[in-house]
Amino acid sequence: GNSVTQMEGPVTLSEEAFLTINCTYTATGYPSLFWYVQYPGEGLQLLLKATKADDKGSNKGFEATYRKETTSFHLEKGSVQVSDSAVYFCALSDLNSGYALNFGKGTSLLVTP
Amino acid sequence: ETGVTQSPTHLIKTRGQQVTLRCSSQSGHNTVSWYQQALGQGPQFIFQYYREEENGRGNFPPRFSGLQFPNYSSELNVNALELDDSALYLCASSGGQGHYGYTFGSGTRLTVV
Image 1 (spheres, chains in turn purple, cyan):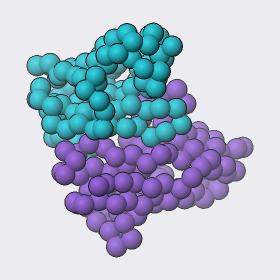
Image 2: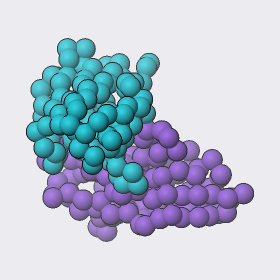
Image 3: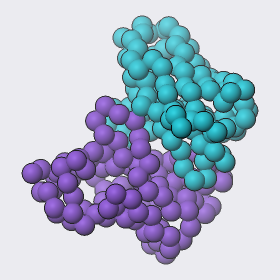
């Protein structure tokens, strides 16, 4: 079956540091890949997505590239801000699962001034 | 364009009771999914409706049931509540059955005592 594995958190960074959150996946089909962000006390917001191999999703300075050869979709940002503090979820969906989202456990990010 | 709205925002129920949670999908979206998010965990897929028909279900018992209405709004019903049902319940909607991602509501926080 499908599964998503994310790096364990929490991740603590100083403002303007470089961010990488690793995500690898297992899927039987050809999944779409997503990063969602959850701010404290809120629901999930779609951060970026990629629907086929070698696609790069980007939004608000965050980027992730769909790597089929390594089954990865790592999230990166060149310079984090305090406002980026949140929990980040990697997820996949594919036709076999009716496009239901399969989430990783989440990675908590804390950015300090 | 309105987003996904859920009601109520918070709810406290007693073990053994029944609860109904409601969701209004984003305008133009015909697919609605429900997820359960336990504290500190990633969301878990409960079920999905596409044009009023259930077209996917996760590993949840039958006491979790749902409906989608002609206007694509939805309900999640949980019977015989257990303490472990305490969680954040998220509704998400999508056009095109979710291939390009979902828009999430802010969730309903259910506490079972």
